[in-house]
Image (tube, rainbow, N blue to C red; front, side, top):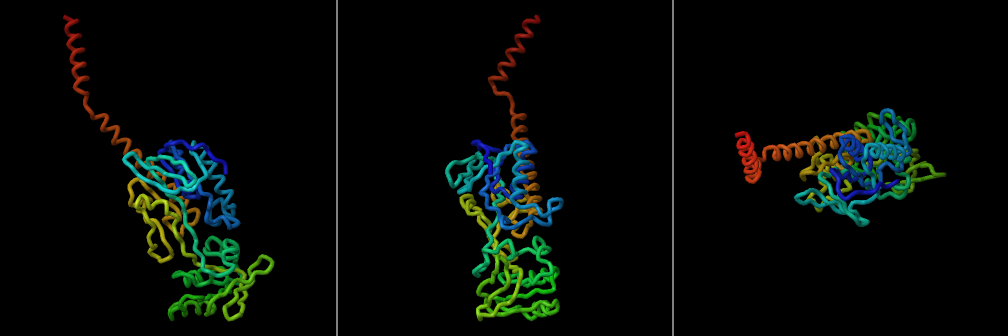
Length: 340
């Protein structure tokens, strides 16, 4: 990734160079704000072959989509630099963002779009297949595995729901309870009604032949043939650098991980700090993340406009100093005397 020369101070620093961050920066740059995106280059969807469900860009490789986004931000004068943010602190004049590799930058506002980390179940082979034939989102990947033998590994509170969703794309779905409690009576009835087989017992590993998933090996030695496996990772916001601002991830209401809460505009509980994308909305797809980044960018610009207007009104209302008033009086007297 090409780096811009980072200045010392910006209106807005955007932490994170994914869809949310770049679209937020695009809105701000188009609003004639000075903005820099600090990109750690660790996109969640890097293993995926394409971004899906994104109108007019369906199937675009993630790296290509981000490169287009960087070019658009730069077209309007925004900067994009590589780096990982270590800390962020606040004082009366704004924020100081310090990079892990050294150096810092100041800003009037922060937009946090640092995304999340998917914590996968501890099953050998799972991480190697992640984003290929080990999946999580049926709307992102369901079409690509349609009519295949799909397994769903119970790994979170939404796993039964996930199995029922994937049934829309295939009539061959198997639910592996793994180390989670067996489905409740109500859940078991739903799964049975939809023709979803339930396999109890712990999953030992994945069976892969010629770089293709072919089955799920159970702890008892049996193998259940599968071509794709869905899991529900625990999703944890990348937000450790916010602790110096007193902002910490909290448990998501759905019990699927930890996020940074915001109000509907993206504003966090720390004044001057907004968040958008997966760092706050753990289940947002690329399109939703981009839209949230754009909305947050617009809100930040509006907030800055309000601040600048207050300052302008204060200056407008400030009376002349006593010295200036006296000087004006002297000039007025001189003009009247000259006229006489």
